[in-house]
Length: 307
Length: 259
Image: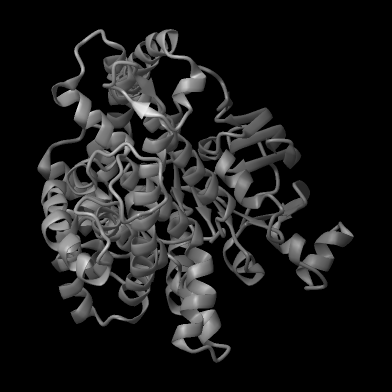
């Protein structure tokens, strides 16, 4: 059939009329939008650095990297090591809970669960992620701590163990769903390759799926630990504010975030050394999460199996 | 049958000294070749010989890979397509492309066909319907889909999807159709239909087709170009290439001694 309309002529004509400016201008607009988050980050870093710099003009590094933390005493000391210790201990406890539970849950959901089970389990698990952290803090203080006291009688009312465990529960959905996504995206053909050689489902999961998905799984761990390090409410409520440098997780200890909460809620007047110490601690916290994010990126590049 | 004497009106493409690099790896080496109007030109060669690269250079699709560099000229109707004044989008409306795997949009059959005319400013419903019908008829798909034009294109079989992609390409009334192994994902019956279609289309269009199947090249093409390691080894009438190749390497490939 003969074409009645000369499409070619119309297109040619339209191209002659079409302006190139929109095509050129839009990417610039997109770039501006994309810059917003970058500029914000730069702003935050600048604030942290300038005020932290003021802090270090008043307090020597040797005092900052010491175990002596007594910001309110007549002769104040600003050793950050007790805070770093508190942060790392609670985060490690959280990871000890979240990694094994999250990974096994992810294996189950991705490889073993039937569609029906998954459809029920997954949303329920994701519900955990929606619980406000203050509720978790309360849960740690008024439920988990008393429970733990029955097992460990020497446990203090405020301690590192209970908020650690609860933080682990909090980051569990993150680990599970990111790891599950990583496993799900392993192509079916790779599984078939192993099944074709007589592997059992467990062997396929452990020896094919997990190695193939390892970069995503590791990245989920690192993201989870950086959430735990930045977590504030749970540790403020359930871990107390003792500025001890101790490895005894049954005792009360303060985290970096807990310290910032304590001092921003009124104890430090603007312009005092204590006030500037907040920025120094904030800077440390920022560096911690930055390093963790870099590690996550490095891991997902290094361990990536190309498929 | 193809004419052997080539005058300047009869060829669409005149490739002159084309080199192409992926980063520092040279993928095409000094290609010189003319593509004749209203003929089917088959491009054959073993995997990695540069045949897909070559065909994608003809509508500058290859430039979507950032590390690609080219030198030399490709004259399309006498004008170098690498010239600054050429609008690559406009070039691609006159040089259509059909890909290895059918790639319809996740839209209705109708929307797929009129996608090109629509983005180029044709809005009239009746005109679009007319374009849809002619294009589908040209692609030998009309009778199969005319009652379900508004169904999703993914409901079609693979062969139908590929013919839909050809119809989509025809809808903007191109001058040249580039096909990059268009039947490699299809079964023999669907392949036969596409080949039949190519045979009919060449009266109106110039077609360049990359194929892995030498039988296919033999069945549908007027001319055949044999590529090897980024070089154009031999380019001649298909019958000559298959019956009496001049180059030993062409003969070896065609008789299946390597490749």
